[in-house]
Length: 435
Image (cartoon, rainbow, N blue to C red):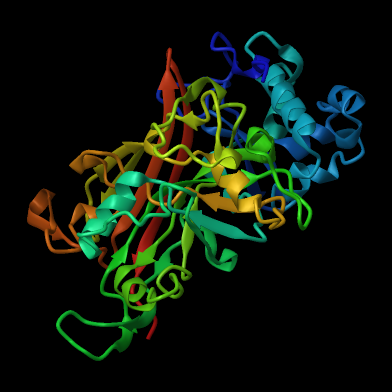
């Protein structure tokens, strides 16, 4: 794919952006903002601001793009006044790239078109702290993969020490289908769920609030182009169906999950909540951060074989703010998406290999992302060895699983050559179980 001019590392914006900001002019992720008295609309993040695309379109800033991209021109400005990105995504990759590149032009330090129009700046450029972020897409479907070899092995060692990695794991991207109705945007509190589980040392299950609430450090990709029933996607074309990436916390009730995952898969242990970050970073913006993935042995079957660099090096971290704490949150894990065994392209190609139709806005999560060191594990199940070795935290705190009032924050960014492309953050606070 030719390099996008919007990725030029020399670009500067007329908006002040610190080197540590997640959203420089080379990023420009898409999201949905809700503005008092205005309603929801599409926006692009730049520094600490959100650029209102609907307001920009009303003021004519996309007229030149509309002339070159007829499908976008026919949809303006209403396509930018929606509660999700779905309608915009349906316009296709040409429209996505044209909008991102036009926004890049408008925000460049030497372009006066928007910069010098004081009324337009006040109308179009809003501080993120003054808007409400909504869930960025409306997924019809959600699939959670299991693509970290380190995570799969660590979990296997806890429950199947003689056979930790099942024989199919290195042959195909394992996954299960989840529940879209409980996918919520960052900042939404998470109610401790009820479920049936088998207490340690007992022979009869009980029903009640989970005693082993956990987070899962994941990313997810957004399907930007769908497929028809029965249609497949060659792995070499899979990335053209992906719009972008966001952070994903697949909250898990480990005791409920363990009891019900016999012999099928997770149900109540997983379907109560998953949290997503509000900004979707485009695959185009991540292009400079491609890396080769881990060596795959045995060689995948031909429909999953790829060449070149289809993994991305995105640094990820988990922060914990304990219940009642007044200090800043502290990091309890740090890892990278480069550790993932199966790439997004392989995940999508396998997903569609049986003819399952993909729909615009669908979310496909990576599964828990863990690395090879003790400090790079992506969930408490691994960090505490199934709760048997609690984490020793500041102020003499011992943590096996999440307590009511605990807040988990996931953050992510890709960085090199002085350019930082951030995914922002996704956070959630645990509320007590319902009465």
